[in-house]
Length: 148
Image 1 (cartoon, rainbow, N blue to C red):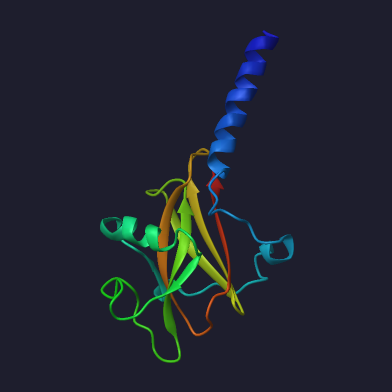
Image 2 (cartoon, rainbow, N blue to C red; image 1 turned 90 degrees about the vertical axis):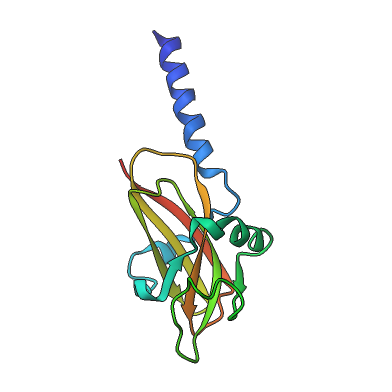
């Protein structure tokens, strides 16, 4: 019986590890994780890049967490930005695409991209958001999680 319990614990731990081993995922320091520490952007200020362009967006973000966009890059899919705002392509991860939603928080030049979803722990998948902001993002935190 102890062996069965040990095998079950190891299996659960390996699943948990698979869900956190993506190099794009990095939680912010605890002082920024307090819900009110970073103001949340309105949902009209960001949008997920559609699946048909996800591979190209992910490739652009392979070596950097943020890329400035212009009218030649994904312009049909990102939110309109009034000056002085610009659009930036930003890394994102999710666990369950169909039961969750993205949130973006910003404090100065720091962005926190979160995806909350319902469901058990699962491997993370990469995605990208187009974010409209007046401040060029320099530090990007990316996390995913939710409730069972």
